[in-house]
Image (tube, rainbow, N blue to C red):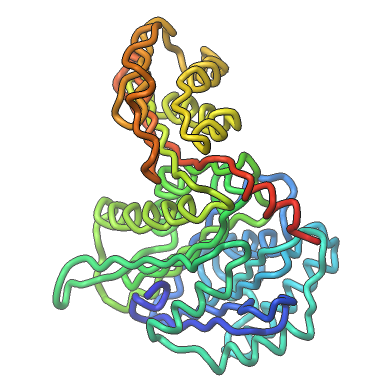
Length: 398
C-alpha cells in the first residue's frame, strides 16, 4: 500500500512521457495534514543534483518556508537533473512552482527528487504537463500508492513498497514507504530515492532525528556496487492525522522495521544479482568498527564474483578484512573466525571445516566474521557480481 497507507496522504504515478519507453515516470505525493512536518537525509557526494540542492534548502527553511515543513514531493524518473548547470536548478524551481500552483501551496513547500541519466536536462514542457495529469490522478488508495512506487523506477524490475501499523483502535498509527534503486547503492548518509509517510504526531526535530538515526542503521548499510549517486534522497512526511504521539523508541523501532524491509528489497533486486549477501562482523570494539569492517569486506569484487560462482572462498574475505586500518577496527588476525552459511571454514588463523560442506545454493548468503576483540556487531548487505550487472550498465545510455 506504500505511501498512501498512512492517513492524510494522497499519491499518483503517471506516464508523463519523460521516458522513451513510455513507462510511468512521474510521481506526486501530497500530505493533506493536519501537520506538514518533513525531514530528509541526502547524499554525501560532493557532486549533487539540482533537486538535492533545492530540497536541502527547503527543509532548512531557505526557500521561503519554515524549516522542516513540506506539503508535497514531486519525483521524476528518466533524468537525474544532475550536472545540468544553473538551468537545472531553474528547472527544479519551475517544477516546485507548477506543483505548488496546482495544489494551492507555496513553492517552498514542495520537495523535488529526480533519478535517471546524469547530464541530461529534463523535458520541462512534458514534465509540467505531466504534473497536471498527476494532480488529477491523486488518490489515497492502495493502487495510487503502487502507481507512485512504480513511476520512480529506473532499472528496478519491481516496485518496492512497505507498510506497518502500530497500536489498535483509536491509538493506531501507521508508517508507509516506497523506495527505488538497484544500482549506485553505496551511500554515505542516504541511499537511492525513498519516501516514507506517517500519520503519527512528530515535531520537525523529532522526525529529522529519527530519520537520520534509522537511515544510518538500515539502508545506509547497503553496498551493492561501491558507487554513490548524485541524487540519493530519503524523505519522511508527517501528517499527524492519527492524533497519536508515539515515544521516540516506539517510532524508531517501527521506522527501522519498514526501512530494513525496503532495504532488503533493494538488495534482492540489485542489477544482475543472483545472491543477496549479509556480511555480519561481531566481536568488534565498537559498532562503528564493526560496520567499517563489514563495509570493507562488502566492497570486494573478487568476493562477489566468488559468491556468484557458488565458491565459499574465505581467503577473499580475510584478505579484504585485512585492509581495514587498525585505528578504525583493531583486531588480531590470529583470533578471527569466518563462517559462510553457518559453516565455520576459518578459525583462529587457520582453515577449519571443509569448504565443500558449505551450501551455496540459497539466494541469501550469510558471511559471519568474528573478531574476538569486543562485544559490538554490525551487518552490511551487498550482492554478488554477475555478467548481468555488466550488461545492464554497459547498455545504460545506449
